[in-house]
Length: 131
Length: 279
Image (cartoon, rainbow over all chains, first blue to last red; front, side):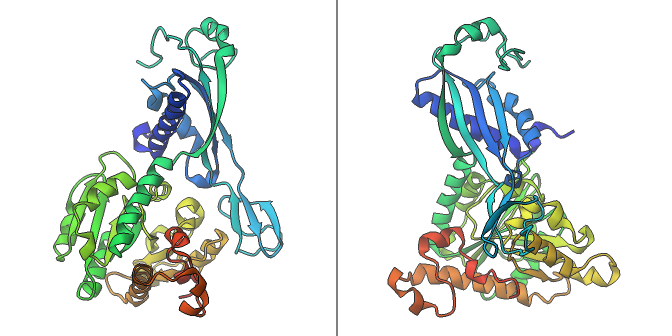
């Protein structure tokens, strides 16, 4: 199995935590309880690897021990010929109605930090969850 | 993990007692914001210097370095070139480029599977950007991770060597979808491969709703003409933006027949006008 440090999900997970920590600092919150993230399959990020990377990337940060909630976004395309938006497959972005290939992606490549839940007061974790 | 609320705090009771302290803040920010900002900074460097920057991506062994060697031989006399090499380890590729008389900066990423904009930024300060026409960034050989990181390039080129099979765009849609050009390399092997169709690669690219041209070439036997012409077009496009910024009102007068792109938009899709399916 690949080490978590061999995948780009770890770098993106670190970005996620950096961004969330910045929001927490702006609100004067010592801890982050939950991070809600939206990921589309065309973003190039594997949800499972993101989950795997999170405990490692969040160690010794305000997000340590927080819950990571990942919502996956469907792949959607807009066909100018049909003037319709429809759901498509990751490796078939042609219009499912007319078959035209000149569609525009309207969803499915998102990689977004949607919201964070902040704790107003610090709670001491008696023992770190990682060795 | 706490089975009641799903949190990972070891002491659940404490957590439950302070639940009313938790509040949600909406953020709605891209996870790549940090890299994208660094990429934008790189692009500003490149645009100020007026050079064309091309990000070369492929699986390992598809022939990125060999293509660069052949490109240097063909274009080196006419244009000032430089290369940033990305590899997990070794200076081998940079040495091969320097042997052709072209400056090369090697980035060794250690265990990282891709280049990011910050690594490229560090490398580009070792290059005389003002004295260059084209900068190639040879990314780490990998069809997955490099796709997720903008480096500040003007165009992404993905190489697909014939022994890899013609269905790669369908297997790696994230990488191929955002390519501005697909180069089928080792085309001199086509006569001995009975399962690779150039037309199939093109059909797969359209299935990904991509208008990117698909060109077949062999760095060993040539000809490289179509690839070199694509580079020349891209370079002319960059130069046009640097030396003759067209004011908004002149859009129809400056380039008849070609779609006009305002400079702001051109930063996102600088090569749009060269992105026709059949060059």
